[in-house]
Image 1 (cartoon, rainbow, N blue to C red):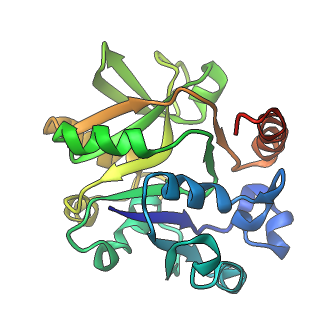
Image 2 (image 1 turned 90 degrees about the vertical axis):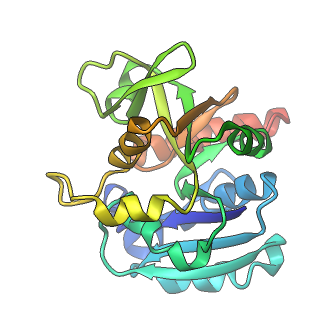
Length: 244
């Protein structure tokens, strides 16, 4: 299994911090943000990792991460010239992935548990996409993609609902097969002008190939100032308590 870290975008919600640094190099407590998805992939036994970044401060990403030797992995890099949505970024990984299953992680997502059990569930499920859910609250559901479940079965997927009927937040951690690239090529941009990961999930839901697994510990997103501050405070508490 291979890994992909999506570390592109302009980081506009974190401007002016992102005027001087790539968003994914900003600190979350005692390490750069991108270290967390790297360690998440390592916890799944992944050592071949593609880092997809934008043109903003891309050189900082390259020089900081290097070959991957210091992390015990091998990095490959790909530059996304224009932000076009998460699926469009994942689509750049097609040559790197080849025929392998893979895990794609948004670079501003942080969890504190091993991904290894989720790999096992994905491998044994027959699914072609597995999403990871976190039990959030109404406020986080309103600014996230959410999954509506009946028991363990996904029955609906909603992007940023004004009135959430579910607090099952879809974390930016996706287990995928190479079949996703055909779906991505056929996607049409949304009203935002970007391809949407929810549309990919819905395609798999239609054919009964979408699976879900739930986190048992904290999930953090560090995409804006409030989330970044919250991520720093919670991560500090987790690390100092020895639970991270």
